[in-house]
Image (cartoon, rainbow over the protein chains, first blue to last red):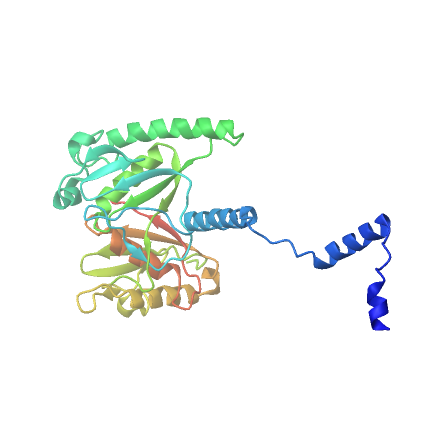
Length: 202
Length: 111
């Protein structure tokens, strides 16, 4: 009986049935599409956001001030954030700078205690507190600040701000002359830059 | 004599820190009241910042009128270095516990 069955060829299927069976087989045997590349666009987006966030946080948390033998900031336990607004006036051991441009060379510390930055840099002799070359430079900065305020639609008559970066050994005589000259040049708010420290400096 | 304001001035010289108040006069040694003498002498050759903070707190707490007073005047010696001025400002600004004392610092210059 089985021999007889083998002897008869199976009836041919129609083309339609053949195609349907073929589609079914293709579907059944189809493999999952393989990911053969890595899309890093989304990852780059995340990295960019993190980078911008880190740079912003770094910029807000501290100011970048190079420390050297000529300029070493005093330590303080203060915890407020440094100001980013204002004209930068730097008093190192050897010179005074405004926005990284040298204004005058300083005499020895002993001489500064006696007569500040020296009589030849003053308006009316050694006892005067106004530093002429610094005042000239600050008045230019004040004009620029006024123009910026006007462009920003802020009150240009408001006093400008200054950031004081001074070496820890600067005598008060020199510091007071710089502050006095700032006041005379319509700078009314001063930010004293310090290094944050956990303990008070003895 | 009114007690409305303290008008505290702190003098910094090479050998001590002295304080005075207007009206009133010099703050006595040890910050015990009014009187002549060195308010806070050096301790071990260094400025005694802890004693200065304690003195500022004692003066501020001495009258309810002074509770809202935030101004203090600094009159350093011409040779006083910037680090000492900053440390004195730190001492006068807050107590170690973080309570505000005299947060607005003004400089006095002798000509």
